[in-house]
Image (cartoon, rainbow, N blue to C red; front, side, top):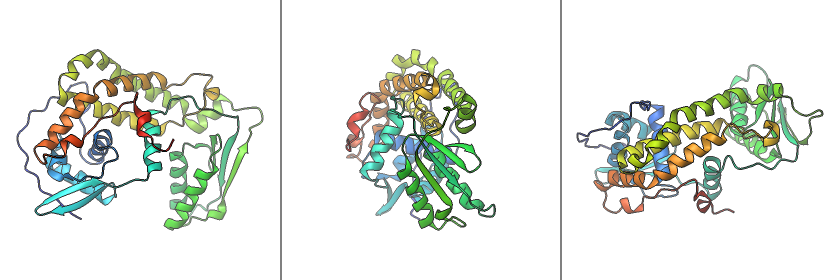
Length: 323
C-alpha cells in the first residue's frame, strides 16, 4: 500500500457548537468520500495526499487520522494511489457511467414521485442456519436494494426489480460467499398482494416509524441553519463544513429510505421536508464550499484548483449522461 507524508501547518478551525464533531476512523472515510463526490465528481486526476490531509484537517481530523482514512479508502478500492517522486497522489477509482448516473439519482432525485403499477417483487430463500455468512450477505444486499424484510426469509419491494436481485445473486456466487447457494433463492416478479398492504405490514417490513423519526431529527438539526445562510455564504471554510456535514447526513438517510410509492404512504412522504431543507443548504452554499475546496488544493498543485466544481440539487439532471 502506498503511503504519503504531509506537512501540517497550524490552523484556526471555526466550528459551530450545534454541529457534532466528526470523529476519526470510519466517519473520516465517509467525510472524504463526500468531499470528493461534491467537488471532484467524475474526475480521474490524482490529488496530492497532503492536500487530502488538509481537507480533512478542516474538520478537525488529525494528520495521522487523515492519513489512516486515506489508506483505508485505498484498501477498499475507492482511492487509487500513485507515486510521483517523493509525493503520493490519490485518484478516485473510475466508475461506470451507469454507476455514476445511479449515484446522482440516488442522492439528488430520491424524492421525485415513483410510478407504481401495484405489483411487487418478492424474494424468498432457504439457507441453512450454519450458512450465517451467506444469510447475512444476502440480507445486506437486499436491504441495500431497498427490499423490506416482511418475514425471516421473505423480502418484498414494490415494482419490478428481478434483474437487481439476479445481479446480487450472481455477485454472491462469484465471490464464493461460504454457504451461499443460488438455487436456494427464489424471485417472484409482478406479484400482487390480495387485500393490499396493511400499515402493520409496512412497518414490519420497512420500519416507516423509525425512518420518519430520522427525517424529523434531520430537520430539527439543520432547519435552524436556513436563517444563517447569508452569513455562511461569506465564510467559505464554514460553508464547506456545513455543506459537507448536511450531505453526509443526507446520504445516510436516503440509503436507509426504501422510497415507497406514495400510494403506500397515503400520499405522505416523510422525507419531503428534509429534502427541501437539504437542497436549500447544499445549493446555496455550493460556490463558497467550492472556494474553500480549491484553497485546500492550491498550496499543493497550481493546476488542480481550477478543476474543482460544485453541483446542486437544482442542476443535478445535467450530471446524468445515460438518459
